[in-house]
Length: 454
Image (tube, rainbow, N blue to C red):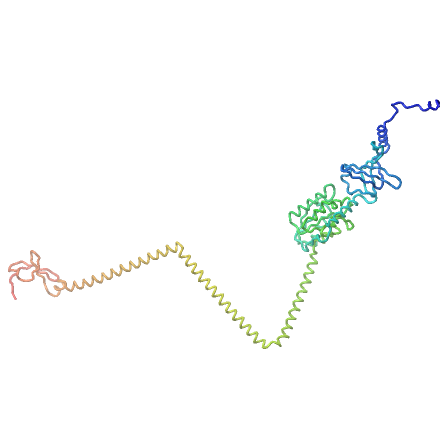
């Protein structure tokens, strides 16, 4: 027994590991031996605590290992993790020292088989479809003949050149407004959504074309973002998509009002062919002329048929013509009467208005004063004429009774030489008295020689 015991010498305290030391060294050893590797497995026991970290088990048919996917590593994950999902994970191999269990620290994860972008595409498509954003009842019909077409795309891509060429050829009548925007890369989705909102707010266009050329799923990913899809759903202007090639489908293609297989097809969908329009108009013109001729022919037939049934159509026609003439004459009379009445009213109004005109009033006063002047002048002239006539009459009377007239008949006037008093009888005369004798045209001084009494 003593020999056996001598072979099993107890370790010194320095050679003894604590569990913590052991787990730490094992952890360091695992990190040194295993660099970052890719593993494939099926998710089970998925846990999503409030911390935001994800914990699950990766397993295959024969084994399993615990995994930790910390929050700062999965914030940009494009799909949801679920139990039973097969994934391809980029991991660090480590040891959870608290339990002595080795685990995988997830750095990146992708679905096994289908890529992460496709999973994200399908998930968003299912989500929006469930909400009803793809329903036909929300689809708007683009105008057949848009006045202004808005094009939301890269200003440097081939898509814009193709669209402009087609629209110039097919529909030169439409105005075009280009809203340039990046169509791939970081921030492209937010820029596209913002540009759509700006274009809608400006209210310049009747329809939008959202387009870009072909590319990989990653190149087209801006058109698979939820922010773009919801922005398109919220606007009122019809929008047509033309993204990638015919086989390419994006989330935008399901939510727009009309999907075109390519940018060129979008240009054709939004624009009528001006040549076809002209041909249709010419065809409609021919049809219209044909219909008009047919209608005229039918009416002629109806007239021919009914003309034989109508009693004395000529008399009826003459009555209608006569009645038309009467109505025309009456209408003409009423119109002329109304015009005459209106002219009288206008004339009276103009006259009344003119009477209120200060110039008219002053003119009236001037005319009145002139009239008074003429009346006054006429009255004075008449008075002068009457006075003149009266003076002539009195003059004639005076001439008749005037002593001069008597003298002209051969008589003479005898007056006292000194006093010049007229001597009417011989009472005041005596012989030798000097007298003055006035004849019609001369005077005589004489002396009384003898007085005769009769």
